Image 1 (cartoon, rainbow over the protein chains, first blue to last red):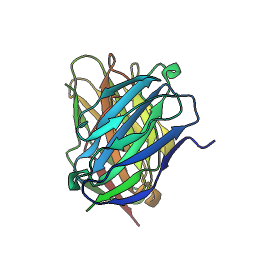
Image 2 (tube, each protein chain N blue to C red):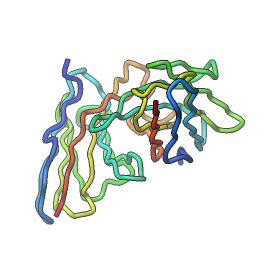
Image 3 (cartoon, rainbow over the protein chains, first blue to last red):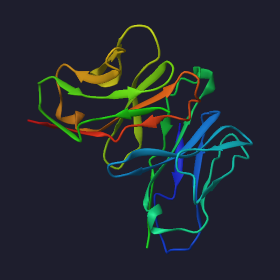
Length: 115
Length: 115
């Protein structure tokens, strides 16, 4: 059981480049979300989705784009990378069948450096 | 708006001693409260949650947490710490009307357990 899989694990970009962080889950979870983790700031929600075809903005959505064409996948796109987007990114999922009580399953993280 | 505060950046405790990691919360409405643990270079793992009912909730690895409505606190506790408990601990909150994807996390507390 793979759970939540994120790729790549590490990436270095130059300012202005674009890229996509991939996230896939095999638990048939309805809810998926992206967080970024920065020292001293905890985790901050970027975007989230409550089901295929439905996405919404979190706390820090600027500079990021998402789509949810299938239940399994929730890619995060950086449109024009900036040094402020240097961070560790986590994808998470949870099941509405659990009552939506918020037990999130996290991927291992993707460490992004923007030069 | 919802928020959590973890007032201690780091907690140091000797193995075998009891440990407490503090968390206070602020929500409008009834809170759903969570503790997650992050080991080095890993994603977050769910430890325990409070939804309703008994104020003392038990979770994984011998951890428990006490919900105190009057003090708006949800402190994480363990009667006897292990060196392997050393990790980064996050408190999180959402309201009972929010979605499972929209957790608000604290800034984290690093627990260091020494021999």
